Image (cartoon, rainbow, N blue to C red; front, side):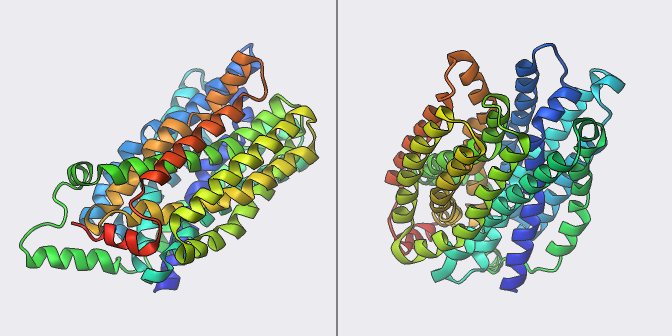
Length: 430
């Protein structure tokens, strides 16, 4: 069953994040088709703002689906999230363009992004909680890291698809029908993901929590949102801060960097997508090792090492890219930051879930993760595009990255302990 849970969580989560990622990877094409205007940068910024719209509803979707998961079960919540993502992605894949239906086109794109946002809001906490609660206690960091592997897999697949399409289709073919292919493929997420997740059992820790509550003649979490806000403020603040550095790394170096490389530095689209593919492939391979290390030497040790190395690599490699823009320096940047991003991403799922008790775990993880993503992740491509334009400096995104690292270090300092035993004690409260 543990093997089934890993497969269901990783593949289902990868399907979801593939759907979510391809919008950012095809942002330039979508800008031309759905947000036309005389200024190419303004058109792109509207598209990236729409990309960010999906993140504003993520805390709401995360809390609602988190509460649903804490009350009726992890399995049902995961099935609902994957159905919503398939609906939103399918809408984008079949929508007529602005030239065909006018203002209705961008409005419908926004609605589709909102549906995707609600789904993505509940996916992280649901899949992570399921992984953690099935895993052996002394290997939770390792198994939890597969959650981030699934995101890296999704981003890697999305980048590979974007690379193949931009390499083998001309501009007319790409804009007329080629860009729709990955969105149409995303429709399959619904039935395939539901079938995969229907084969797993409910979390044993959740069932035990419900059984204890039944014996005590009370519900395990009548108001999980209220309980987690009142009883675990330090854990919430620390987790949110750690999520900030993780989410900024994803949305700057996975989503924004290829756009920046193409639009500002003049690097070929195929080269930008290939570099993104290589970077996410590195994260996919390295994350389990980082999760394993967190089980052996402690969550904080791995996390702080990752943040410091990530900051140094970003500072040096981003400066080289801007000074001498090329496919080579872009690839070196993606490789350099991705190695250290793995040590941030790997222990992050276990940190966000293990500091909270079972009765509020799904709700709390959804809240911290999605608030951080809403505030610092979803609008990162838009904000950084604006920063470059407003300051006239292509180095502006680097300062955004450095600020996120500072926030992440504050979060690490607030964590209740440095090793697995301390976090396990903290998670047993309540």
